[in-house]
Amino acid sequence: MRSLGIDLGTRRIGVAMSDSSGTIATPLTVVTRNASHNQDHRKIQELIDEYEVDCVVVGMPISMSGKIGPAGRAAQDEIEELKVALSVPVYSYDERLTSKTANESMMQANMKAQARRRIVDKIAAAVMLQGWLEHVDRNQK
Image (tube, rainbow, N blue to C red; front, side, top):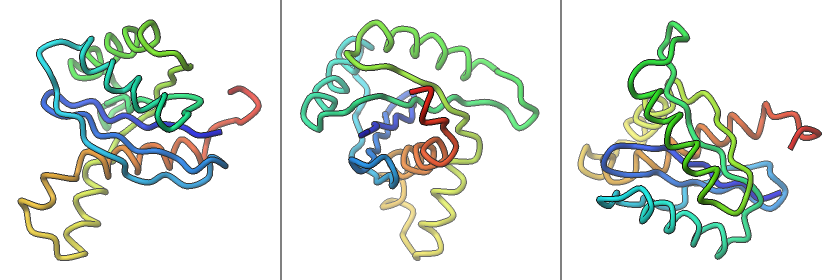
């Protein structure tokens, strides 16, 4: 089962994809936000069609205390929009520390700040998707 991981941001959407066995997540691309969520969601649907994706997993920004703040509420709203707009099931998954983990791994690889900014979103999406792949109950998909 091929899954697409989405890291929603205000300016960019990080996208990652699993292999066809649903075992390994890999950064795929970054979608620059448009004025309308509809346009963004169409681009995601194009990726679903192109890569024959079976489901989408959206990172849910939850605070370290476990509470859902303004960013989490905005993500919940957009997840509901995605469930209507996309042709495959949409799941959410806790994305706590994914951007931090992505940035730390790039810093260890001695990447410069400008290069990190260009790809951090898709790497964060891959970190989140990998966590979901490792913890999902495959019988409930």
